[in-house]
Image (cartoon, rainbow, N blue to C red; front, side, top):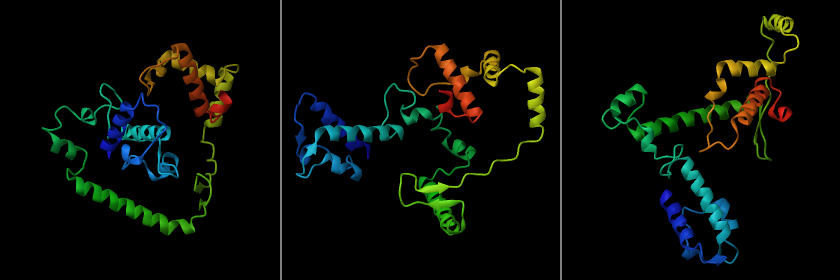
Length: 227
């Protein structure tokens, strides 16, 4: 599945200086590159390939392949060669690692077990959902499964006493101030790492945003109210 995408990238690279807007479908890699949902945007009514739409489609396919590590980026960390994720002695101790994870080394047996488990869960869902008044299947919209929100849990025992004690000890101290002091004392913000290749924000601004995010999520105030 990844070879056609790389072939499409090679074609795009070779046509960088070509100003053509449309190309015939036989001139570009099409099979296993253009999904069904993209075809109406990439191929017009005359059967021509819109080059701009084609390039966007190929980049979208490249993104998906990189995320699944069918294609990897040399020198990258998150999207590196998946073989680099394995222990250095994996080839020599393959059986020991599989045993430690309680997994079979037989790929067919592994995938068969996954398919069987998925089939069983789907059967349970199919049998249960008509009687489950907490779940509804919708026929319109992006979210086709509607879940009834859970009822609020009762307040834990002792929470009122804790609130009272904190209010008496620090009556004028806000929770955000407490969180900030805890972060300064423990250095907990250092445990957060970016998923990007670099950080553009100054550390002070980044720490401030992290504190606000933690406060918004931890208090259920939400990020929009904190922003």
